[in-house]
Length: 295
Image (tube, rainbow, N blue to C red):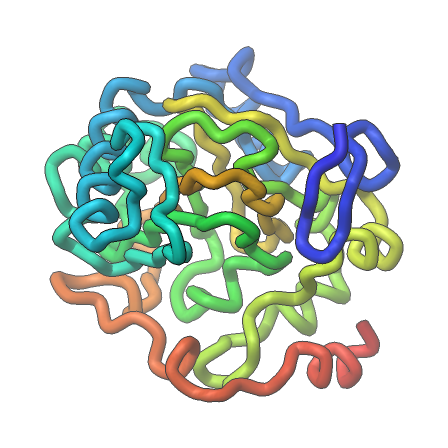
């Protein structure tokens, strides 16, 4: 099967694109999960969330999009068909959606918080800021490390990517670059960036072939169903396939860490301030920085 990723078309099963492996057989064995995270740089967990809760959160987001004229009302709301002329939407920090009981019942459920308390070996907290997205047709996320956006606290910080509904390959699911959490030169250069402090673009590349040719490994992805989630650390290179459908890909990113370690002040508290510069001012091209780094 051919899929679109950034500026390239890739064949699933080729030297450039493979399949993520789940770790459900390890659930309940914290040490085995830690070892798998160290080995793979991610944990794909099927039915990590209650699928019915995910569907309820999905409906809240769809209702918000519909109220803003972004849903084609000729079709059932749950299909999430994009209205003519509408684009994707980023609702990061939009507490009217992200802090509804339905949404918090997914990303701050007792089960999720207990998972991280066990995995981290200490009581866990989650950032109050939630990154919520409705990805439109033709849109994708370029390859990046999360650390460049949230590196002012502990680096022992984990992202959970939760699709809000089923995400087949054509809808643009998340993809991870195999072995990227062990690329020391990348971690010592790009991985030290703070996009606000350095006024630098955050995405490292939107060419997945270039990434594989330069760093090795393959991109890994899979089809997701409601309830599935993937967890990864700050130095795991990831992006997404392109959404080539006429329906929104709905997903959220949430972050978890130990309560006794420092947290990036941009993303915590009652009203997180968010980025200071990124998304608000012109930033230096990542290509210029890559030349300096020899990457």
